[in-house]
Structure formats: C-alpha cells, structure tokens
View 1 (cartoon, helix red, strand yellow):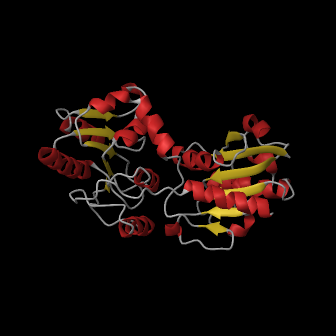
View 2 (tube, rainbow, N blue to C red; view 1 turned 180 degrees about the vertical axis):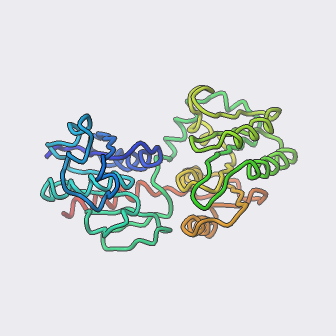
View 3 (tube, rainbow, N blue to C red; view 1 turned 60 degrees about the horizontal axis):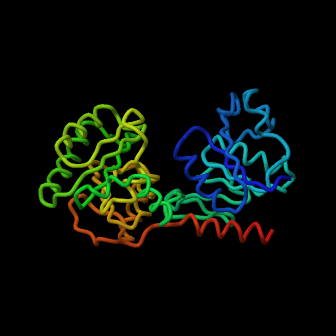
Length: 318
C-alpha cells in the first residue's frame, strides 16, 4: 500500500477538475491517472469490472498496478470502473471514492459524491449542491496575480463564460444573439468591461457572434490557445459580476464559488436534472436572470473543503 492518492479520470476537463480539486485537499501526494478503458469494458463501465489492467490499452497498463494507493478518487463513468476494481484488488485497503452518479449501487465504493440534483441516496453518498472545484480566496488571488492587466479595465468588470449545447439543450446562434443583446444593453446602462471566455464546447458560430458584438467594448474575447494562455482564473478573480450560459453545472458551480453576482440567460426549458440544479441555486440566492439587480456580494458556494473533511473523518473512522 502506497501512501498517496490516485485521481483517476478520462480526458474530460470537467471530470479532471473535480477529481483533482478533492484529491489535492486530502493531504497525500497526488498522482493523476488518465485512463481510457478498451472494449468491451468501455461499453459496460462500470458494470463489467473484472480483468484488472487488461481493461486498458497496453500502454496504459503500467499506471494501474501495485502498489495500490491508500486513497483513489475517480470522476466519470470510465473512472468508476477502475475505482470499483481497486476496492477488490486492494482487498479493501484502498479507500475508494467516486464522484458523480455511477449508475449502479453506490455500495460498490466506500464513498460516492453525487450532486443533489442527481437524487442519489445511500448511507455512503454525499450530496453537494454543485460540482467540486478548487475556487477559494487563495485560488482567486492567484488568478488576479496571473492577470494583473485586468485591474486597469473599467468597472464593473463582467466575466462571460460560454459553454455549448448538450442533450436536450440548444445553445446556437439565436441564443448567442439573445445573450449579446442583454450584455450590450446592460453595458450601455452601466459601462465597464466584458471579458468573454469560450470553452471547448462553444460552437464556432456562437463564438463569432460574441466576438463581433463585443469588438468595440473594453475587455477581451478568448476563444482558445491561439489567443494566448487561458485567463479563466484571472477573469473569475477580477470579476465584479459573472454571466454564465445555463448548460454547465461545473461552470455555474465555479462561478457561484467566487462570491460576486452570477447571472444566466435561460431561453428554453432545461433538462430535468439541470432545471433542479438551477432552481436550487436560485432558492439559495446564488443565480439570477441577466437583467436582475443582485447584491454586490453573495455568500460563495464552496463545498469541496467540507467534502474533504467528511472524507477524512470516514477514512479515520475506518
């Protein structure tokens, strides 16, 4: 048994962010394993959980080998396969944690962390309101230090976080035109600057509309590495207000962790789980319509440290 924590994910940036955010709070050396199972395990994960390292392509197998870690934290369906395997392979000596609903009995892990809108319950299930993330005062201060030029932009500085379409949710050119209409109308009234950031899921036509509309407004539009280093931490660190598209639980959770007002434009009915998440944020006073006037500061949604404390207690009790 090795005194370290494995953070196990696939290539999804959102899954990596959650697993690493929790792992880095656990007080153990962290090793990030990027694992992609091969067929048939990839088709059936995490239900089909025999075979050990044979579930991986040959070049990834050396990563998933003894000595097993004291703690393994996975996020996403593929990772759930390996955290489930580790519980058996280590004969229960590795404490296994799975983030997000694994879609099978949570009893296959020592702990499952599933957001409240997943409606998953069990004696070993923790239910944060949003997704886990690293955003706290130190993280925001580091973001400001990394992007000092933003301090010179006119206030209010408004961060605009652009996601993309997902199942049962359209985020297209019509949506983008509606969003920039709201952004420009409020900028006309309040002045300030707009800092818009695309994600890997943002459609090119959406990005083009936002870039053209904001061309004469102080700030920036960042579309990817061709525009330089991602200024996301700096935008969150300097923002006096955030506008976030409604599609991403991760983006909304991180925005609500900042402590400034967070707004979203919902132009069509949301999928059920996402609608429950939006409603929970609104009930807590954390999420507002794009034209709503909100308090300049709000209590930030920061749940990762509390989850880490609960995990530490459970590991100690065992």
